Amino acid sequence: MRPNSIRLNNGFTLIEILITLSLAGIVISIVLSLLITNIRMFHKTDKDIELQQQGQFIIGFLEEKILESDKIVYLENMDNELKHDTNEKLNVKKIIFKNSPSAKDQGYIFYLSKDLNANTYNLKYGKGLSGAATVEVGNYIEKIQIEPIPLNSKYTEAKGITIILYFNIDEQKKSFTTQLCFRNSQRRY
Image (cartoon, rainbow, N blue to C red; front, side, top):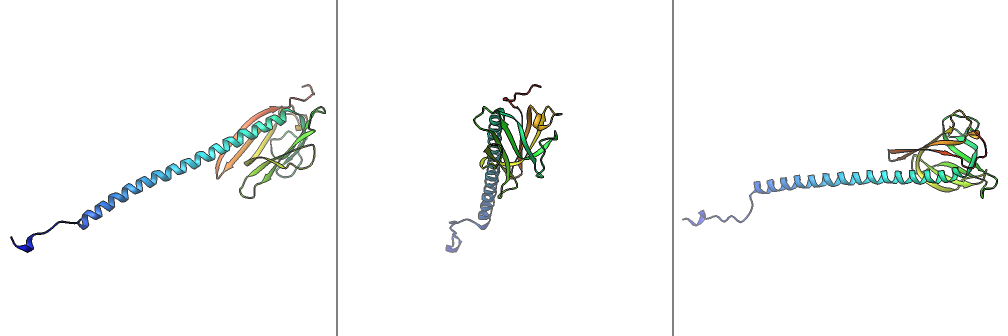
């Protein structure tokens, strides 16, 4: 044996390093894609839960106040037109419910105000038969549609209303529908 013919194999060849790096890159890309998919699903689920909570809370709050009321005395659509003497299906901007004379509060005001940070509205609430609604009740509202019950009656004469709440968070949408009757109404139908 010649002294120059003995070769020590103490390292990796260039091909072995390239194959190892390629396999590591594939594994890392699979793990990252799974992680990104899970994060997106988490955000979508989080938004869906937020919309569900907003919808349930607002419906419950409206139900409590409407059941205490006698009737609608003021209704303004999104075009700032007064519509309480109609029976049209409307997108509501402001609505005032009147309570019976024996009730603690004269009435309840609900108003949609534009959210400056989003393309949605916030629902605000107040007490009385005039003035402003100042307490924020809910967010992410795209629109609120209502119809009188029965359909052929004017809002001021209706015994209740159908409410459809439309929500939107970052283009994820959800709607809730409920029918509520005025419990304290003294009128006969």
